[in-house]
Length: 249
Image 1 (cartoon, rainbow, N blue to C red):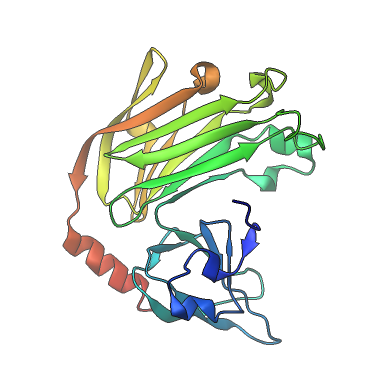
Image 2: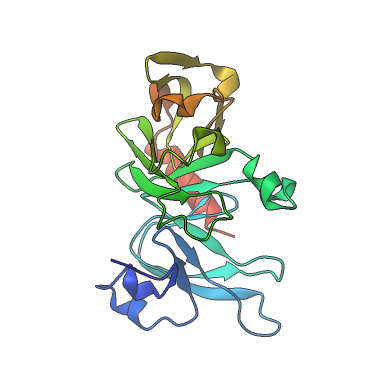
């Protein structure tokens, strides 16, 4: 199945009659939803959110957990963009890169946006960014991403030996958006090696948790995982109040 990257909402929500008639918002792949301001002087949009969890791409705050229309600020400096719960993203810090060579030196950051079941998955394709025949020559690699049962798994598959592991810059961080507990310890496993992630590697926030300071040689075994060992439940009441606060503005 081949779909355009920028696609109509109906491709992802074919059973949602409200989504079928939308022509001023769209999906980017299956994981991002954009709701741009299209008219001169417009500073907000009436955005339709299907029956899914959606998080603000920039703040990672939960914006919607049901089918509804919300008024969203749309300043001239940015387009409102939302991550769909249940899907994983891979990003890089482009602010430090002026050319492709600089971008390739930046590590990859993985974001798991959790759905109501606390799960997330995704795929990521990357090549050298220069060759025109990467697909035909299989000169690329794939990442398979998943999070469930308190464990994040990342699997690297190199399609052709000509695409060497040196072409890959490594990982900077792993973020769980919508994770409802404070993580106090976790274990990273790569091949036969195990690393204990301590407090300096774990950043808890009101939107989830981020693991930083990851080992630089994670790709040597082709896959790795992060298992949450211990956490403190913040409770549904806390997160309910936090959601009410976030949506009250």
